[in-house]
Length: 95
Image 1 (cartoon, rainbow, N blue to C red):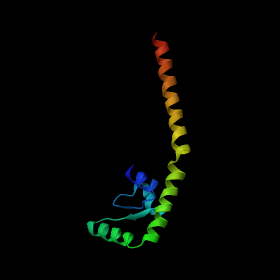
Image 2: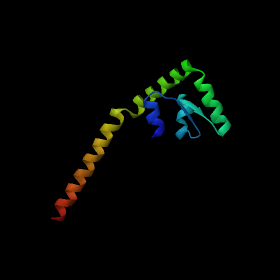
Image 3: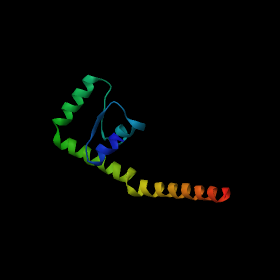
Image 4: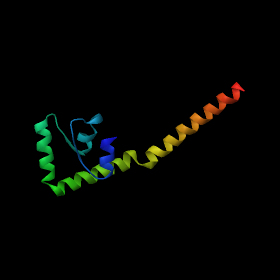
Protein backbone atom coordinates (compact mmCIF):
# COMPACT_ATOMS: atom_id res chain seq x y z
CA UNK A 1 0.00 0.00 0.00
CA UNK A 2 2.86 2.38 0.73
CA UNK A 3 4.19 2.01 -2.80
CA UNK A 4 0.75 2.57 -4.34
CA UNK A 5 0.23 5.66 -2.20
CA UNK A 6 3.60 7.13 -3.26
CA UNK A 7 3.03 6.27 -6.92
CA UNK A 8 -0.41 7.90 -6.84
CA UNK A 9 1.40 11.17 -6.09
CA UNK A 10 3.97 10.59 -8.82
CA UNK A 11 6.75 9.60 -6.46
CA UNK A 12 9.03 6.88 -7.82
CA UNK A 13 10.24 4.18 -5.47
CA UNK A 14 13.57 3.00 -4.16
CA UNK A 15 12.88 -0.20 -2.28
CA UNK A 16 14.15 -3.61 -1.29
CA UNK A 17 10.80 -5.21 -2.16
CA UNK A 18 9.35 -5.55 -5.65
CA UNK A 19 5.85 -7.02 -5.29
CA UNK A 20 5.29 -9.38 -8.19
CA UNK A 21 8.13 -7.75 -10.13
CA UNK A 22 5.93 -4.70 -10.74
CA UNK A 23 8.64 -2.09 -10.21
CA UNK A 24 11.12 -3.73 -12.57
CA UNK A 25 8.50 -4.62 -15.18
CA UNK A 26 6.94 -1.14 -15.33
CA UNK A 27 10.12 0.81 -14.49
CA UNK A 28 8.56 2.56 -11.48
CA UNK A 29 11.79 3.04 -9.55
CA UNK A 30 14.74 1.02 -8.36
CA UNK A 31 14.95 -2.22 -6.39
CA UNK A 32 18.05 -2.56 -4.22
CA UNK A 33 19.49 -5.32 -2.06
CA UNK A 34 21.73 -3.45 0.39
CA UNK A 35 22.00 -0.29 2.44
CA UNK A 36 24.78 0.93 0.15
CA UNK A 37 22.57 0.22 -2.86
CA UNK A 38 19.74 2.15 -1.23
CA UNK A 39 21.99 5.14 -0.55
CA UNK A 40 23.38 5.11 -4.09
CA UNK A 41 19.94 4.75 -5.71
CA UNK A 42 18.45 7.63 -3.71
CA UNK A 43 21.47 9.85 -4.49
CA UNK A 44 21.24 8.93 -8.19
CA UNK A 45 17.52 9.65 -8.32
CA UNK A 46 17.80 12.92 -6.41
CA UNK A 47 20.53 14.14 -8.76
CA UNK A 48 18.37 13.53 -11.85
CA UNK A 49 15.13 15.54 -11.42
CA UNK A 50 14.01 15.16 -15.04
CA UNK A 51 14.39 11.38 -14.93
CA UNK A 52 12.70 11.31 -11.52
CA UNK A 53 9.70 13.19 -12.97
CA UNK A 54 9.47 10.76 -15.90
CA UNK A 55 9.56 7.74 -13.58
CA UNK A 56 7.07 9.44 -11.24
CA UNK A 57 4.69 10.06 -14.14
CA UNK A 58 4.93 6.37 -15.10
CA UNK A 59 4.20 5.42 -11.51
CA UNK A 60 1.11 7.64 -11.40
CA UNK A 61 -0.17 6.22 -14.70
CA UNK A 62 0.38 2.71 -13.37
CA UNK A 63 -1.83 3.42 -10.35
CA UNK A 64 -4.50 5.05 -12.50
CA UNK A 65 -4.54 2.15 -14.96
CA UNK A 66 -4.28 -0.74 -12.49
CA UNK A 67 -5.77 0.58 -9.25
CA UNK A 68 -8.07 3.43 -10.29
CA UNK A 69 -11.70 3.73 -9.21
CA UNK A 70 -13.10 1.59 -12.03
CA UNK A 71 -10.65 -1.16 -11.04
CA UNK A 72 -11.35 -1.02 -7.32
CA UNK A 73 -14.71 0.64 -6.55
CA UNK A 74 -16.92 -1.50 -8.76
CA UNK A 75 -15.43 -4.85 -7.70
CA UNK A 76 -15.62 -3.75 -4.05
CA UNK A 77 -19.23 -2.63 -4.48
CA UNK A 78 -20.12 -5.97 -6.10
CA UNK A 79 -18.45 -7.85 -3.23
CA UNK A 80 -20.30 -5.81 -0.61
CA UNK A 81 -23.61 -6.29 -2.46
CA UNK A 82 -23.03 -10.06 -2.46
CA UNK A 83 -22.12 -10.10 1.26
CA UNK A 84 -25.22 -8.09 2.15
CA UNK A 85 -27.43 -10.27 -0.05
CA UNK A 86 -26.01 -13.46 1.47
CA UNK A 87 -26.37 -12.08 4.99
CA UNK A 88 -29.96 -11.04 4.33
CA UNK A 89 -30.74 -14.48 2.85
CA UNK A 90 -29.24 -16.16 5.94
CA UNK A 91 -31.17 -13.88 8.30
CA UNK A 92 -34.50 -14.54 6.59
CA UNK A 93 -33.92 -18.33 6.78
CA UNK A 94 -33.26 -18.14 10.53
CA UNK A 95 -36.50 -16.31 11.30
